[in-house]
Image (cartoon, rainbow, N blue to C red):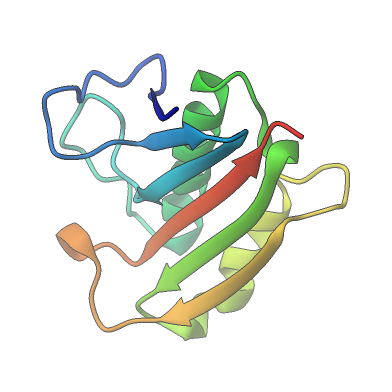
Length: 127
């Protein structure tokens, strides 16, 4: 059975965007950008700040499922400029304090929604 997952601070119900879906013990998290929940504000002063907001958004959806970053098993990172790869990695890795980050790939793309530079989708598990 499928269950919708939302962050506690997310009131986007009624929109065509579902932050996360749980099925069979797996949580599939939609691509998160640097938009601050419940606002139209983008936090994109630089790639580091943008990545922090994206990771905070992922964390909020995980928390909505009763999970944390340690439950992530797979991430897909989309970037419009791979020149910022090292900077993104520095911020991204800081969210995995146990030193065991999930499997992932990083994909260079031409454009992302709302002109952002980074988007991350993820899969987590309860197992």
